[in-house]
Image: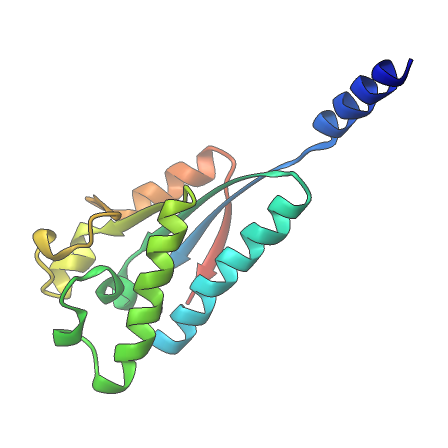
Length: 147
């Protein structure tokens, strides 16, 4: 009888589990703000995981946010932003290791004079991040913006 109750309890817990899907769209050139938002994405993931719910997150990067994916960001951003970009890039690596899809826009790389080979290895290059963002939304991902 104990086992039946345990199995029933586990089954109800599984049925009650939720799936959270969000695409975080980053276009901000405020590097301090971007770094704080990247940290918040991980904190949000941790809170969801504590409830045994599942997560499918993606980050799309374009516009002024593009330098955070460059291996040579120190050549692209102001000196006062270097530490913030470093924190953002380290956080992106952690998020990628946790299964977050990270995509950067090729047009934004071009506009920021970032060669494709300078993009960190855990980031996927998309022809157009708008298309990626729309695709995630079509798959039921909530849109969260970093502007």
